Image 1: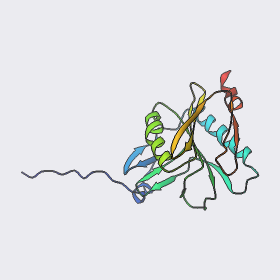
Image 2: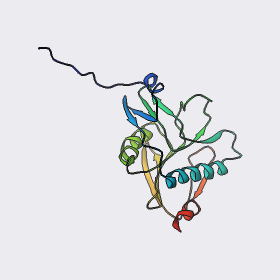
Image 3: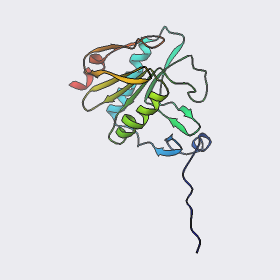
Image 4: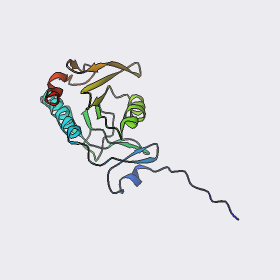
Length: 182
């Protein structure tokens, strides 16, 4: 009797782009995206994108996008909630690291966002990584310093200026979260 050998999964971007539904690809492993996020998640995503967009409106080099494919490598494609990109060619997907990435945490994505994506974004030298916790109304801001993320703080009501970026936006977390405190 023969031995059945199971090929290790190692999908690539070519496989990814023909799949139906919403997926991410991390080190060749396909990961199905959760069903449409809760309303609060979507609302926070929109508010972050709008606030960043308002801040960089006059900056011709930068733009804000949400739910866009970021092709890190041939076997890793991520779809961050919100990104601020600068000097990016108009392609079908992001080809260089965004300056800012925002991920809004849900129970089904927490480990992926806090561990796997954290490590990938750090390795790819993304200047700022923001983890947003909708239930607690807290944003954890990480800034890349000497190749590693340094936690800048847990932001609830404070302002934060993103100085290590091309257009240097500032977010007032009090205004951002105020709607949800009622």
